Length: 372
Image (cartoon, rainbow, N blue to C red; front, side):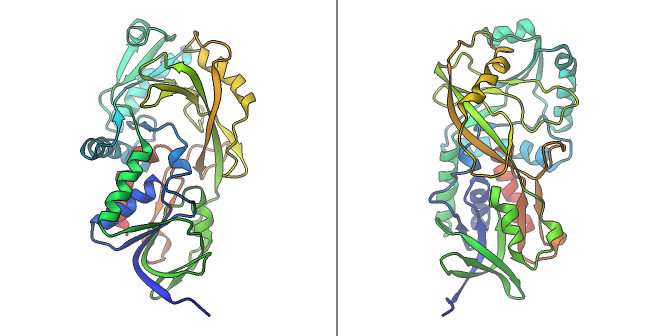
């Protein structure tokens, strides 16, 4: 016997930081919202396996969604965390040059940042950088005072709390098997036999967004990009961090980087970690850290921190970038598709929401709410 169809105004698939931010925005706008999450808890994938860095919007192509939403989202996120009591810190970041080509490219980083609306970067020579971080080794650096760190889980709990206060709900263990575009709305079928009819459906499924979009009957397959998975392993440092700011290697000019190099980040407790590296893999759930990958970290880290002791790095955790570009392609922009593009009323797909997705989450949410 077919289960009865339950009507709901808006369904968000995926309870990561972006899905929760979108659901909160819809809820605060007076919409009835249900979030479907296939895992046992919120934010167990990309949202909990990253560097927890609040980016300022330096590297992204000017005018791209990544640039615009990161710059807007950073200010929104700092204001939100201050207002809601979510733990965060503007610790600052040094982008350090250790080769002449990196050093020569530092002024271009400032130019790109200014074009994106980031105006507080400072160019430092070697001595100025070492005054900030005496353990550092570099030829010069760019200082970003507004870069910070945030408690991503605290942020997600806050977003969930506001959604629920607005009458919305998050349902875990909810696996969406298919979605039918009908004249009456989007019919969602879950693995347990539940059927929902939604006026609006937001696909914020992260790694699974491309697979989910392919299950939408009525959506032309040419609007669904190929999913690629770039794993990033982190190694933690025994003992306290040698630096109080984040340390990033400057990008090598003319390289298409899947990540931003093996950088040092610190958490709110003062623990340092290095990573992520980039390893293209076949599956989104390939999250084991291979201890042997740590060998390459030592040489990378010692370029900017020669004092790294032998044996000090321990395997930490791995994250997965939900990419829509392959290993030898330039990094793709965020893809946020509404009905005006794909022609399915009420459907919004979010593809390739990797870094700076955490920083951008509130700005992405406003963007999606406007499309929905």
